[in-house]
Image (cartoon, rainbow, N blue to C red; front, side, top):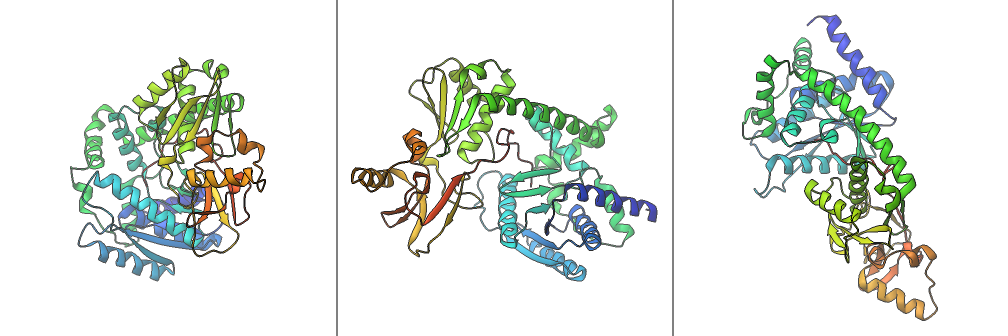
Length: 433
């Protein structure tokens, strides 16, 4: 590879990361493979020029005997470059479920926790044009629609972290040639040749499809077109959201059916899925068939006494409306970065024995007694919210004693507010991390 081509790759990277970077220190996920090692060196060069501090993390999944040595190799490479490095260990797999899916979720969770601990807003990932093409092939096999076929986006907000993919426009082989030209070594993970995994099958299939003119570059161009289509659908969903929906202080979602019925089916589906995702504090939507059954029930006014789906309760709200609330049994109290994926919370007074959990029946009874005794008066937005929504709001308890219920304006030891992502109506289609 000539020096000119080498310089072109760095210039291409600098332009893309410059477009994506929103300021502040940045994290880089480095496995030791060719793509991430190239990402590491390209980032180091760019950061030195613009004065950005870089942190590096390697996730050791502890699935191969060599993984610890590989992580140590990345650490040594970072030391030579003058970069901070940390190895994150996953020990949670019990041998059940889909290994790649479990490993991906663990990797994302560990990296997000690490980034928050370092005060980082963004993490760079080494996905390439080839990864994008393989992703599209796998999603074609699953019958994905516009969102799935839009592939991985250059920038994705998830778990409170911005995930950036500045190498989506670069081929895998090009990066390896770049590394060889600089005499930089990398590790080839043997799992990349294991045909038990769908991504490896997609990689092999892509080679055979070249006779039909189906290439990595062509599939990546398709993803770009689909991303534009997805943006148009999100825009239409946003217009419908402004007309037909509102959020309550307790995280409840109100839908007016008159304007909703007039929208195209895809926009109806999109808005419903986004509402379920945000109400549940989730990253993914429900299964398509279950979602369609719920949509049909909503449009035909056949919800009856209500339905449960995706950790949400869906009930009629008057003759021409629907209200969606969090299901109490599905709440997952946690603050990474949002409590139950929905509320920003912050304690204002120290109490070592206190815990933040859902208000629940215990807290509701406590508030009822306070109201009866004239000690507490519920605010109007609390009284207007469905009881099911109130029970799932964050509250501070010491043993069984309610200390604070901030959404109910009771107590001053805890602050909280419902905080759906902005804009909330963009459909959730998380990319591989």
